[in-house]
Amino acid sequence: MAEPRDDAAHLWAWRHPRAQGAAGRCIGRTDLRVDARKAKRLAHRIRQAARRHGLPHEIVTSPLRRCADVGRWLRRWGWRHRTDAALMEMDFGAWDGLRWEQVGHAAVEAWCADFADARPGGGESLRGMLARAAAWTAPAPALLVTHGGWMLARQWAGTRAAPPRSAAEWPAAPRHGSLWRLPAAALRAPR
Image 1 (cartoon, rainbow, N blue to C red):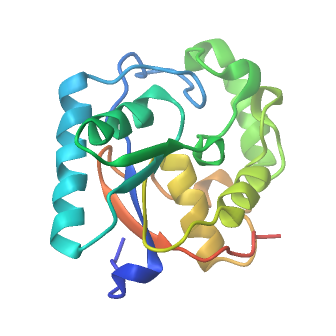
Image 2 (cartoon, rainbow, N blue to C red):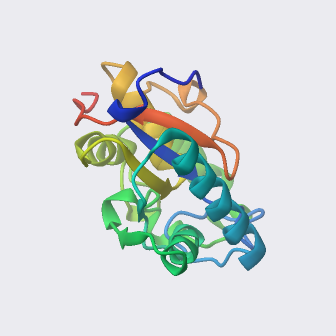
């Protein structure tokens, strides 16, 4: 994602490190661990970015361990750390934590057929997540450790007027540990 020039007007959002045990599974709100060295490494990168750009020493993270562990490292180094459930990944309901083959091809196809409004596993619809990500506010600049789905939803809400018509329109998730600068102001959720 292209990075805007005005650092103070944006959210500095890092995707959490790769979670242990996530491969081949539907992971939304399943609270998986991350390797402590990877959490510490990302915390170092965030600290360096803050120093280089004169950013506040305050981090807001999802309460899930794969994000909050990074915030805990920063807190050890004198930063303020708070968690916010609004930054959590999409809620996949009964699917959460299952292997994709347990969810089944037919269930995934049904979700993809109504991508914006279906509630996978009885959880949250993409439209709901788009609204949640668009509504989140903080004084800019704000530093976050969050999830790929939340980052995509925030970006989508800032650039599109409507939710995706199909799963094929939804972009690929950012790399683990990557930084995106996203609009800080509350956005209008795609209708």
